[in-house]
Figure 1 (cartoon, rainbow, N blue to C red):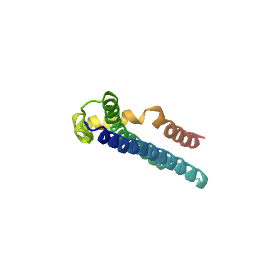
Figure 2 (tube, rainbow, N blue to C red):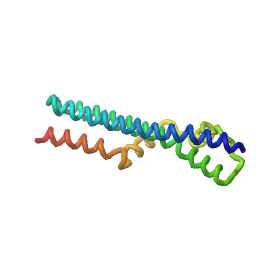
Figure 3 (cartoon, rainbow, N blue to C red):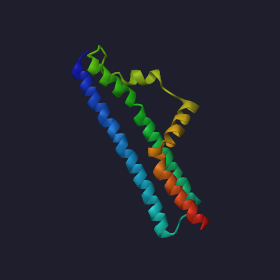
Figure 4 (cartoon, one colour):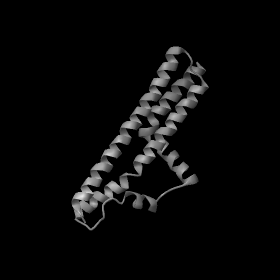
Length: 135
């Protein structure tokens, strides 16, 4: 094992992991801007709920991508700590071992979407619109 190669891979993956977090925040901010824009313009309606649902789904997909990096990061950290013979640059090999497709992937997106840190702003925004439509 080359510890420097593992550390380089860890740095790259950790940077990407953090980047997904930032992009998830951007999606949430876009959702808030959509709501504010529609509330100011008085165009609150069912189509806006669908737009917010799409953004919520995109956030869940984005966080699913992020979650695929975490197991490899943890594996690299363990290998560095244990000074094991782990090979660097094995992200895709490890990912293919647990790769999901079809319905299983859609279920994974749905599971991500209901995590509190993902669902919180989206649910509040949609509830706000529903309350505005009712009252």
